[in-house]
Amino acid sequence: MQREARKGKESNWLPTPAGDFNLVLRVFAPDPSMLNKQHSWPAVEETKPFQAR
Image 1 (tube, rainbow, N blue to C red):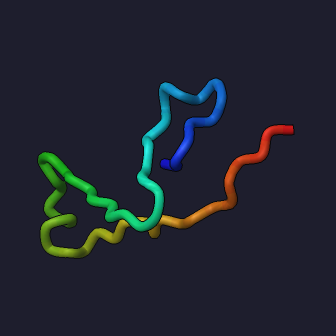
Image 2 (spheres, rainbow, N blue to C red):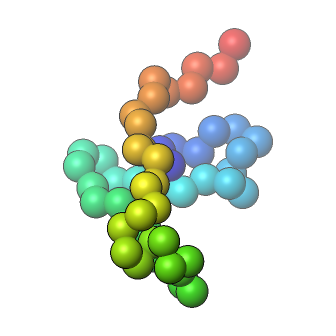
């Protein structure tokens, strides 16, 4: 997820707006551990923009 697609990676790109945005995860047919809060999702981490060499 980023504002502009990386060259050659456009098919796997999720665009984001400029500034803040909310990320929502929708799970279809969740495992019971997800419903009773025993499952923990990994944190979303911001990374530095990719710089082509």
